[in-house]
Image (tube, rainbow, N blue to C red; front, side, top):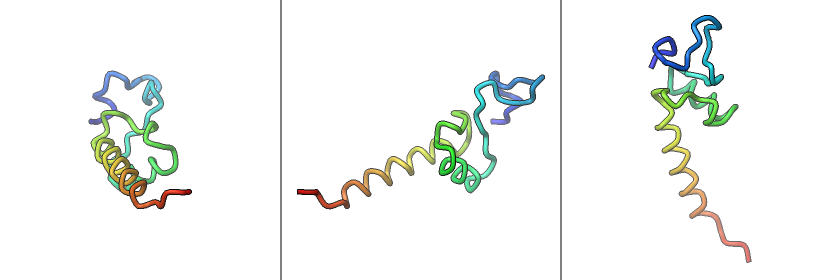
Length: 70
């Protein structure tokens, strides 16, 4: 979604009212998520759900591979 088409976009201030980011490419979305966290990315961003799924599947697989401390 383009920011200007969103109800949360402030045309006078030319920015998101929620201070969210809308990276255009997958690479940019990964960089933003790594630097600022997933919550910094707009929920309407085309790449956000894929990032969420990749983080969840990565967390699940890394927790299974860790040895249990005794």
